[in-house]
Length: 149
Image (cartoon, rainbow, N blue to C red; front, side, top):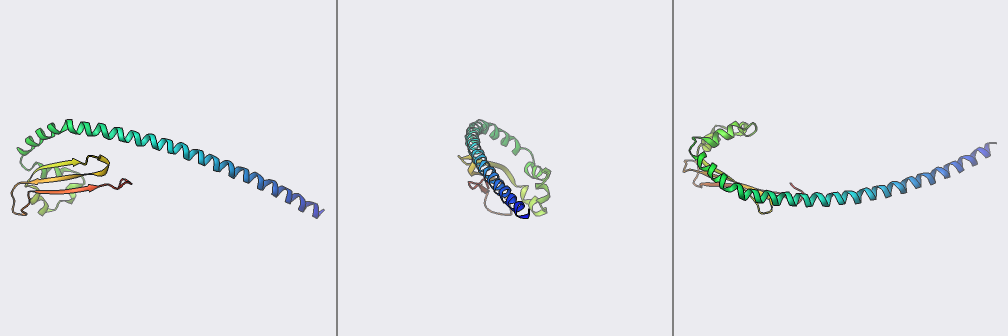
């Protein structure tokens, strides 16, 4: 009787292996199909991103004269940029007393997107004549890699 029990187990194990092989094969096919669908969705998302960037670039051009008009009005407000930075919840914490003295001389601030908005942007600080440095413009450029970093 013991021998019969061993044969039955081997038959059961073999049947289970075939069952697992079938499940694994089905799982692999499902995952491959899922990847194809994900690739299709990614392609559509990339197209959507391109279209959004085109619209954003168009409106950046439309906004430019209004930004220029706003910048002219800002120049008439004493310590505008210092106050703006100090009022920002994160940036205000970063400015020490020496920074604050320098920020009093900011006359304007410009943000310029690269033609390909996904590549990055630059921020230019324009300064009035001051006792801290000779340059009237300081520019910080942020460049993104393909991974968006």
